[in-house]
Length: 517
Image 1 (cartoon, rainbow, N blue to C red):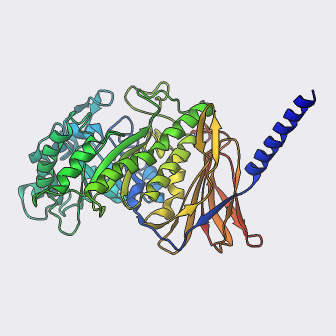
Image 2: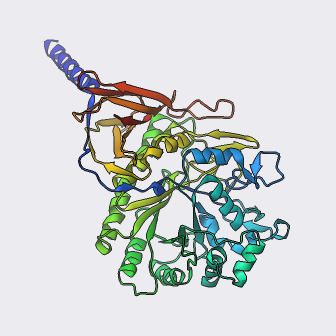
Image 3: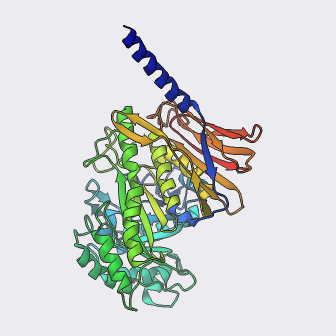
């Protein structure tokens, strides 16, 4: 019995020691004297595909709708997107892009043909929302246009004519047609995607075959608007597969004068295996940890593909463009097949923050990204139901991170600790810092642990005050609904130094962004 009591006493002392360490604040240092790369505002981009209710109902209701709109585009959605300062919107897809023929979406609405959308539910595509409507939309929200040309089922001529129609100021037949359709001045197109997932739904092309097409489309998809530069983005890897990365970067390195690109795309989702089976609500802690672990894989993906890009492009002229990312979950029960509708919980907020932090750490290479998708589809910012609209936890994270747009990355150091459940061990904390264009220092911290809060003690850097917002929720699967639209909403947070210590108290499963003074 004496031996048993000794063992029990020892275990109690160990537990007490661990508990004491867990209760201690985490010291975090911001290296304000070691500025890094600029965090390009374009990493906070959006993606709007003709998929489910993403465009129709979500953005476009038509000028005759009783839902308040400006030239057919929902006023409430526009106002919400302006608040998060959307830098760019990718359109029309996605898999839809490689079956989209732009001429179907111009001219009088009554004369536009009804076509099919075989990728997403096999529904009728009315083509009511086409080129001019998209350009009107990005103008209303103050964003840049990111178009994807059809490499899968289109032709180089079709792509070339679309760009001439959009961008030329010369009195060509296509320019006169554009003017007749309501826009006499040339448009400015900031980004052009040369295909989409051509390793998959865009034609199942081998890397070498895609490169042969890339050279043609990069050559003939010209921008004629000299007052507005356009960057061309090649199709890149599907997750961990490095075949496209190697082939495209090698071809770029060995290119002649006739073609060029500015970016290489990467697509990677938090999904937990295909087909998507993880539910958006009513999940447990193990399911939460599983998807957080998969989200953290983005760090390795960026490093892996970035290393290949460095081999061919050590000066980092080519951006890594993560133009599809986010949580892809089991569809909402009762939603239409192929519409990819899912709820959005506090877990999604943490997934968004972890991705943003990864992009910030790799800001020298990752200079653009687009979450999938903007409204009513996958990890959406906004959900709509007829005339009603609500903002998701992911939306709130986007708004909280606005100060990081075009800010200068500042290294941080801290002991992340660990969080373990059912054999899954994760870093407990993740954080990034940056100096915004107005000179303020901003800190973003994600507390991944759903059961324990944490105190963050700012190291000896002279900061005396922290003010900002923290996003947490009653549970990790809490969501906003039309009946309760503010269940998950940011709350004001403020801390003042005591002596020389500035301590932030962070709730479990939270995302916090503060300015440091």
